[in-house]
Image (cartoon, rainbow, N blue to C red):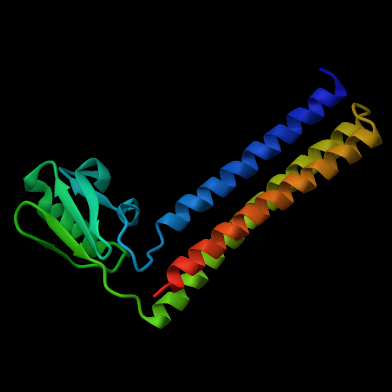
Length: 190
């Protein structure tokens, strides 16, 4: 394998890991509640279904028929009580009501204080994402230096790779900051 192929491999690995970090943060942002109803809010809820912790989305159809309402249609009506219990015990702070066939979750208006708390939560999540991206950059830089010290890559190649890596890092952090901006706006939107 040539020097440039090894360097390109390291850069590609770094790009891929940074992209995964951004995707993970995007997914985590989705589970943070805003004023709108979204089935994603229930993604982290597991239901004790016949002694097995089962993701809610495997036990029911979850829809958002209105901006402030989620409905949960269990595939097995006998699981309604277990689903309600799982929702009540979760950290989403919503109270379910059912009519024997369907569970309804009303999404209340967020208070100003709760909005500020949620903004802090998403900022913290974004910072974790930035740290993950920087850690990837640090790992790849370390590998590049090792290649140079082992004589498998020249200084020019290493420098070119570091510049490229920094561009990718800056782009991913910028992408994360844009996601954060959109999520903050969504939370603060009244």
